[in-house]
Length: 123
Figure 1 (cartoon, rainbow, N blue to C red):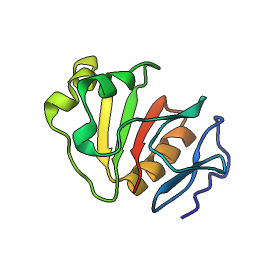
Figure 2: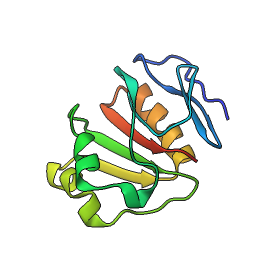
Figure 3: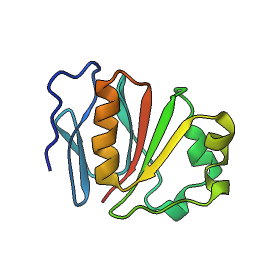
Figure 4: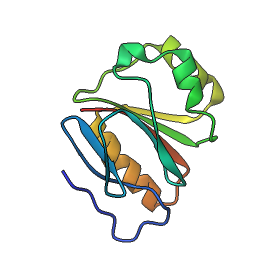
């Protein structure tokens, strides 16, 4: 599915997603990503929710986001609290949803000018 923002405020938005890929600003990626509005996307080593550990979750705090969205693939799968401990202890807003919903939510928050980070496992 292609996504478009009418007037994005920041440089990086999710422009598409589908089975086995994500697109940021029209560039296709076939691996999990960390996406922020202000920096090029980064590969994310987490390929499934069980792979999410405290170290991987802690990486998401590097840019001091106000909100972290974790896209868990085709289905919404809630990680165990110990997997998210660094995020919980940092007090950032945290949303867990399937990856398509995470992509749409990320773009809405970017459009609002929010300091958001999306960590996306492929659907």
